[in-house]
Image (cartoon, rainbow, N blue to C red; front, top):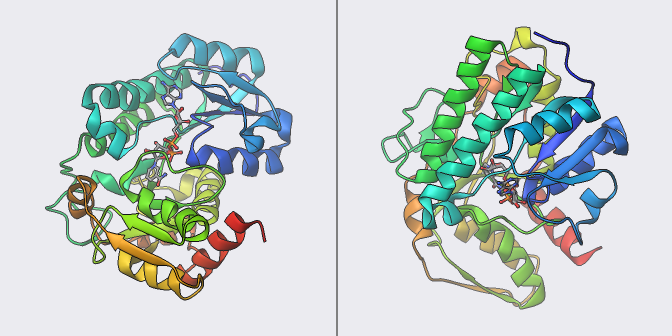
Amino acid sequence: MPDPPGDKVLVTGALGQIGTDLVQALRERHGSDAVIASDIRESAGNSSVEGGPFVILDVLDTDGISSICQSEGVGTIYHLAALLSAVGERDPDLCRRINVGGTISVLEAAKECNLRVYSPSSIAVFGPDSPKHATQDSPLNPTTVYGETKVTGEALAREYLERFNVDTRGIRYPGLISYKAPAGGGTTDYAVEIFHAALNEGHYQCFVRPDTRLPMLYIDDAINATLSLMDSSEDDLGESRVGYNIPCLSFSAGELVDAISDRVQGFTCDFVPDVRQEYADSWPDSIDGSLAEEEWDWTPKYDLASLVDEMLRGISGR
Ligand SMILES: NC(=O)c1ccc[n+]([C@@H]2O[C@H](COP(=O)([O-])OP(=O)(O)OC[C@H]3O[C@@H](n4cnc5c(N)ncnc54)[C@H](O)[C@@H]3O)[C@@H](O)[C@H]2O)c1
């Protein structure tokens, strides 16, 4: 294996919901110039990402990824470019192409240049045959194409680790709640949109039923988990390193509405389920993340109350 070209960081899909917060956190740690944000679209208006180097990069372009890593001295890729569940189910072929093809592309570049790779998975890897409290080893039989691409992503990351010794790691993120960038077309988007609607319109029409309960996390916890996993010694990580369940929150859409109503006077919500209800119903309500706790000692800091406080504070600029 050659030495990695350097110790800089490349983030793919950096303009998305997670990238917007992750790039900022990485730049605070490593310095702005050491973190190269990339996406397939222009960065205009994304102030988090605009504070340092940015390149247009299609994640399907393996040579482009390798060449940036070689010329800029990159040693680690955070691979966030993907199509999320709601967008992905509308165009399954494109979802497979970007999610699976993009992951292969990043892993190939990592093999060639000896890069470390963080590639997130999702709780969408589980399907209706999983227990409602999904454990690390619950069966992975998703009914969404998005979920299939995430199962394949974990398998690819494991294959490159075992066959080519590429240092691959990943977390099965639950629904992530943040305010700096819009949610990117996933089934848990309601848990982000509802805050903007509550503060701007006083009303939200929610696309899942009030009893819909899903695993969720506040973005700061998700970023902190990501950095903790990447900081961990390889010796501490076991066979689940490419797709850890992590400890997270679990609340229903109705409980979220109640928590917001307690803080935003006059807020109302009605529930008009659409096709995303089916995707939500196929996923677990909650996640057993005890393995991540044992192996790399991570637990979330935010509960539902503090998450709601932070979201309202962040959106209203208080
Ligand atoms: N946000 C969540 O709640 C959540 C939950 C579970 C897993 N994840 C996973 O985390 C990762 C990031 O999610 P996100 O919420 O930031 O997604 P997002 O949709 O907000 O952002 C994805 C970004 O990828 C970019 N992109 C799309 N096609 C591309 C291509 N061909 N080349 C380069 N960039 C491309 C998009 O322009 C977008 O900026 C994904 O792998 C997603 O599956 C997210």
